[in-house]
Length: 457
Ligand code: GAP
Image (cartoon, rainbow, N blue to C red; front, side, top):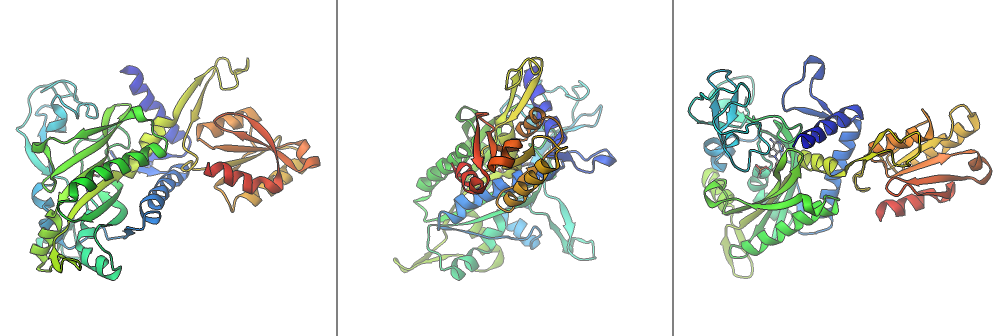
């Protein structure tokens, strides 16, 4: 167990040291459960989103993308059931006043990601005296306009789903879509979480990527199963190891208010198996509720049967930051004695971040063998200028070549190019593969095509 916690600490440290993730407002002491993504983290996050969009919107043809607002009409949250139901049970330690989610205190599946280990004992101060459990609504409340009264109150969205329901008719008609079809969205969501900790796993602000897939009732169970498979395949294709993924079926009595069936895809995080993503069968709950509350017909007219009906919805959903954390955890490797096993590296432990090439924040690095030979530096700068409009590319001339390779391995750069004296004569470079450490000579004028081919493999 101890070693697993060390792994988490090492990942947090790597993320900070190498510009992936920083605590928000760190110079003021930081804010719990809010994290900023630095230069490499934001590129990585963007690449994950692009892969998701390519796969589930661009390549499918039956899913369209939207970009809805964070603030919506307050009635949305009444209709969706969030005002009444979007709450977690909360208890407070009477001694130290720390608040916990009641379900994180109990022995059960949440214990892995919560701080509590023993039933009924405060993990903060060890006391056993708690207030009774009450429901705490997780939505952040705010006001539209300058008047701060209840008639102007609304909420920051806790999920992106609702604008896909409220716009259902507009999207279906303007795009002439026929069922089955899906609406996709990636967007910022906000939850005033009670339990914090575990780095970026449970935060108060995060990106959800989700699809509302509209189907005929009666076909919902088939589509549910298909989407579970699609979601899992996406994670495997991004490189997550099969043995670190599993399904968790929600018990009937624990289902969300809108769901007939939910399966979570869990990842084996360093703090235990925890939810990475989910697939829910939301039935016709949301469209029916919005029809009722808005007074607008959100039915779908089926040309074949000449009848109108409220479609069922299958919702595959996923937290981008959780996927990012899973990908970093899965790709993190330590090589004792160094990767090259030289006598100098014998006492060192080198870190290799084996991110899939598709999502690696930097694809290529250009390195002059030494920085004090102007002709080498000029040649390397030339190669860098050539490549940077094709690939996320970085230039590095500081330190020995071995040290620079180690820095690149730590941030998962798939390819490094070294410009040496041979380059000046032959116009070729050494291309090093991060995973195999194999090196080959490649002509500079062939580099773009060769790298493109290797990155797409
Ligand atoms: N529209 C359905 C929905 O929002 P959810 O399971 O509550 O479902 C979707 O959230 C996904 O968002 C989860 O599978 C998880 O990956 C991610 N997620 C939920 N709460 C989160 C939090 N506090 N911090 C980071 N990610 C979170």
